[in-house]
Image (tube, rainbow, N blue to C red; front, side):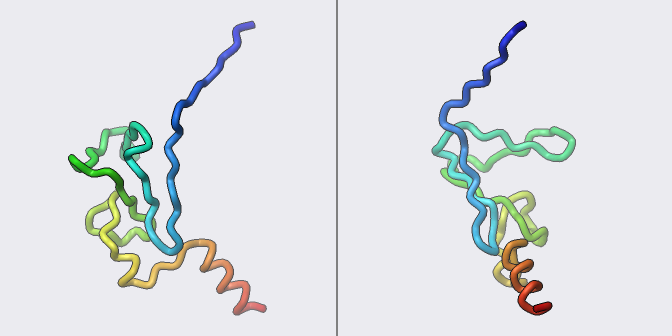
Length: 88
């Protein structure tokens, strides 16, 4: 039987910011960003990091434009905790 081994060197870490965007440090390695149809999404030239929208309200999707701060976006974790506390 053949053995399949996948070797990943320097896996990319995606940081979920509290009530904010998904943050990716592009200096960690190569990142490929594609849309729902598999089409490449260009990453802006010269960037060392990108933030991907998590609130759904960015005018620069898939990239974050800071709208989450203005609309009071709460991440799932905080929203769940708040709901649990209110039901309590």
